[in-house]
Length: 75
Image (cartoon, rainbow, N blue to C red; front, side, top):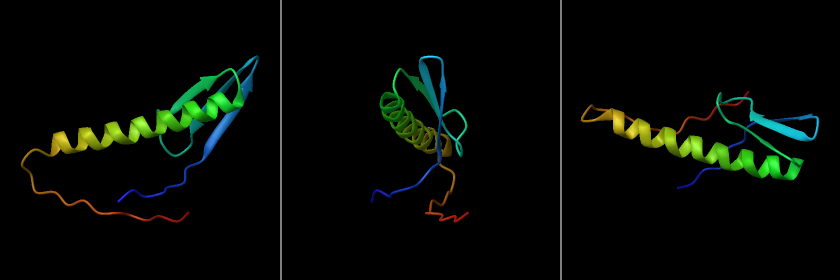
């Protein structure tokens, strides 16, 4: 089942470019010529990082006994 999660997107304009990053997850960042382009790029970058992290986690678990569960955090 797919879950909806909320993250904090931060945008900064520098010259003619916008930068964007996700505050809670290091490494999720992008840029674009417009704010709309940057928002779309950031959403794609976040989805790719989450997908990649899941794949890497499953590969590294090997035959070890592991437990996966949802974790809700409210801050």
